[in-house]
Image (cartoon, rainbow, N blue to C red):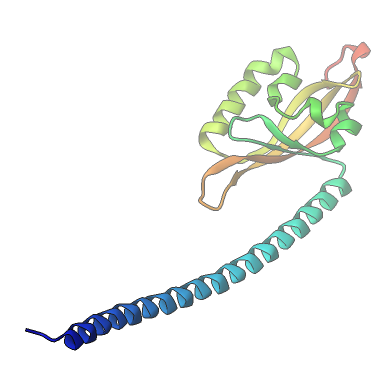
Length: 181
């Protein structure tokens, strides 16, 4: 039989052994949490740096778009305009909000719609580059002969996200002349 003192000693030994293992786990957890907080701080700094870099690139893009006479646009994966430069007002007398969400074929002459729809479908399926495509657009009381160039856009995973392009006015003819460009 063990004595009362032996039982207390054994109980205290077990208690301190458990407590010391808990203390070790507690210190280990605090170290892990501190390490995670340091990593999180580093990630937040990198995120802030990347955000500032993105803002600077966006400002540079906007300055470039405003400095050229050509109309710059971006379409999404469905072929709808997701961005149009403010030049659309100067060239087509249409505000950006009336173009965003629409398809390019919605702005061409009726006789050219089928070929534009086929081209849109082809570009969406193949993600090809569009080079020196000429079309006739009715805008601002004129028929406009336009030259379009576009390249596909891909995200960081390599997935297609749309096209970015520029459209240049080659010739403008008043509609009342009933002459196509």
